[in-house]
Image 1: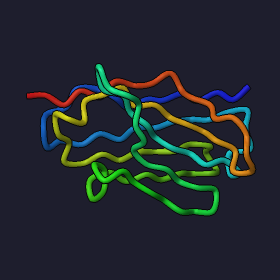
Image 2: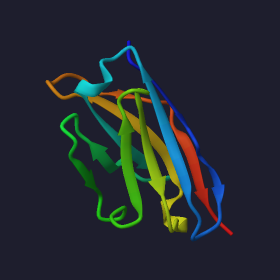
Image 3: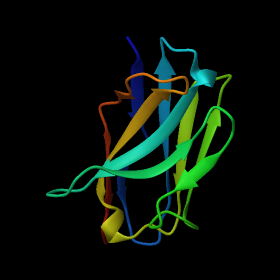
Image 4: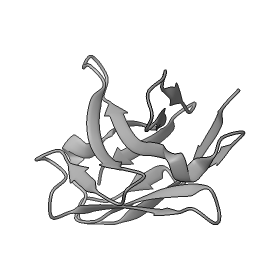
Length: 117
């Protein structure tokens, strides 16, 4: 069973930065599409960014220019660098792993990000 463990969330002031990490185990990491999603209170979970096994990245419009997704296949870890954070970025951020060859996705437990002064 895939295990995904997120870390790096916390409280940050508007304009600040955070880096989230997601360590994966029990998968062939390099063959998975890795992604970050977020869910704010009272809202649906939404895609933030993805990084394919082939090296392509994509971002939600709200994340473009401020967030950067990266992955280290040697460490089985995906990162989300978040800069210029806004109060509307407040949410629980979830790591997602989906086999690039097809199959069910797996989710981490989530990490809380709160942007507030």
